[in-house]
Image 1: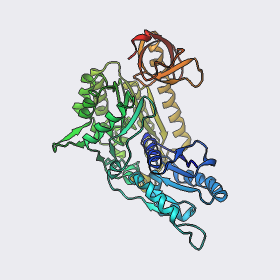
Image 2 (image 1 turned 60 degrees about the vertical axis):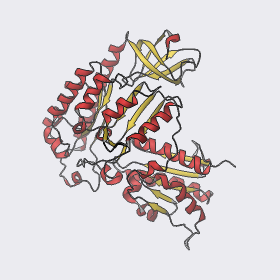
Image 3 (image 1 turned 30 degrees about the vertical axis):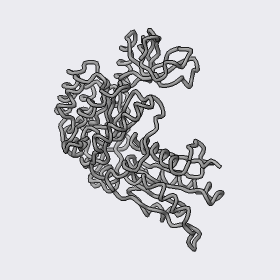
Image 4 (image 1 turned 90 degrees about the vertical axis):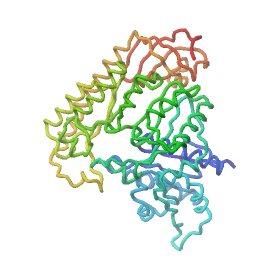
Length: 454
């Protein structure tokens, strides 16, 4: 009988990537196939994120729902991975003794062995099995034990490094994912070649700080992200390259130059700044000023005039004044951001910022966030409107789910784009689209010279 696996993923693209590798692992080792119905699964995995407020509560609420499934099926296996698992470890088992496996981001490759051990284990006197817990930090060992990735379309994520060594005062990532460790350069290139052979056309390099990548080369040297991008662009079939997420202090001159020298590197950059106030940036321990951030963005734009920028913002960080918020708004206008991931500050236990006095009313923080998001939405709408009547290169990914008569793909600046087309022969190819309409979150247009798609 076919065994089924259900994975629920919270959080960032790193977690999405890790979840896909969990599926690959258990598919190769145990023959599990993914299902989108938890009720029919033999194994339930929860891949957690600890960035947002009350992350632990959300985990235990989900586990509480799964407990009912296990009551109906005692053979059901439940695993918790990700950053909350890394933080809480054995405490998850103490609170939810029906959980069978607890593993961190660096130990997901041991999941098949943990599953086997859980199956073989005899229940204790209370009727519960002892959870398999492994939340250690064996650096990048996991990549040596993961199966070759399977492409699931024309774009693919490739993890190039793990962890973070920046220790921003608001962030738990260094404590849950460990210090920055880069994958060997040759291993990353080999994975990209493998994916290109499966029809992948766009690579998105992943890392907590992807531009801090310093991959060991076989000759004893190191390759930075700019060199990795340059070599990837030479691989047959790969015609579009992205990377996320980055840190301003790691944005090297060689990476700035890549926007001039490597046309495969997209005209879109997500570079978190968090605040436009130097006082807040200092309190966050970001390691740069607002002016230094603007200078780097302007130098990138000089090399790629049509580039689109997005960023992350934390509103209401402890001590943020009205003047600090205005500095953030001024930065937003100066850069002309196209998109943002923006949130009201949430205190994370164990981080330095958790001890800071916070006197700003919650209503004020929410009002500031609404103002910021409205401004960026206006800027994004203006950018989209300016794309009307332009010719955009779109990587076609699939047939539209909302309209079977349409194909869809994305522009370089990451806008979903739809156009009428009867066949599927353009899927996986780059086409030119004449943009005719701009909407809140997408574009519509007409394909030009479909026979010249490549």
